[in-house]
Image 1 (cartoon, rainbow, N blue to C red):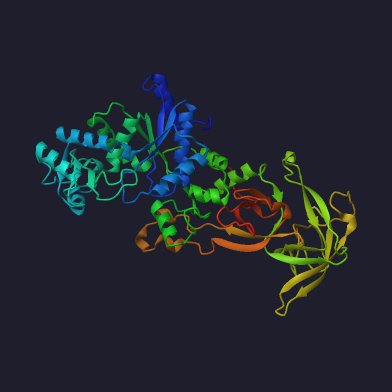
Image 2 (image 1 turned 90 degrees about the horizontal axis):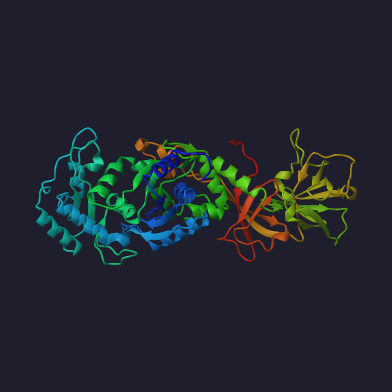
Length: 552
């Protein structure tokens, strides 16, 4: 983490200085029921960063207590994402590793008269729980004897009851102002195969019971989570205390990371993937870490973005342009410069010798001379952007139009002499002349031109596909909107969030590999797509455009 302080860092520092703690152990504990997103990146960076800063340790732990939603695919993707962000975990654990210990702690609660088997249905439990303004009422099964509860809980474990037939509840206080303390369910029956334990268990602990036990078993000192768990902290502390755990972790909450025009709900992300609004969990329009990676964002940029966004308890929505700013800052000295034409328009330079090819010199990255030089072919036929020509231009249009002269980047001045159209009146070709005295780098000091165009040589150009992205969600407040207007979040999906173009790139990019990043002159930063690139055709995802109005 940066030297800039935050309230969690202050707490940890005070704990160490006072002797309350003699070490720092944190954990990143995702449930393997989906892919990680940028919000999880904040938790990863905070947990690993603070532990590193204080010489501590961080565990990667999978909270796999719900076999109905979890899968090995998600476990593998989470490991990949954490490692890609640049972090190494000290221990790799699964909540399911502790199922026997959790069962024994639940038995301890029963023996202490602090847990009971309940026959109420889920709907009845919800009805009995009460409201924020009214206390709950006790279950008719709340006062079963310890012996009966022990026997029933053992029968639950042995598979003698159907799903939903019984649950184990903590016995705390049905009149508590904190609804989380009104006898929460701590075990439920689920006859389902678990990705890690197979069919060994048919009862599974609830998250609110399992999580504090996992932290305590692992000796976690500071259990860092988002503010949505703040109301559950009293239950967290109750479980650690009443289960008589030796270690006593401290739960500390921080505000979630939210981005404008971005869906962060795992449920909604799953729906977008399942209903094929996007190209899988790694679609570059999604805020998933795998999607950001495929689009071309770098781990360094994400780390700097999270640090700049800061750590506080307050709710905030961060402008997505802030994230884009940091990827520009990271790539400007790393990414080779090159030229690509996304919407090609052919130009024939009529006075250039037929069959002749020049190899022009250009810096790979002018801001980083150590990257060296590249060679660019130039001959009689080239491609420019369709948008760089207008037959009847407005005032102060400095690109190509009949009779106007422009500079070709790294090459010569050319002048538009003739416009060729097809039978539909569409412009399909331009005939131009060039001035051999105006070669870039020749020291030419004659007339000046105001427009500079990028281009690629037609004879040597490589075909390429370019994918341009816009925000997937049109309404930046969608995630917080009330559903009273009967709108689904799918109503806010931007149908124009992806534009696919077919054009050409310089031949020196023939060896570009998946995840290689480039700055295309005037177009922005692009990443070689690892999913759709083939030997015959490179596919480029635009990471960000070149310019931004965002200021830190």
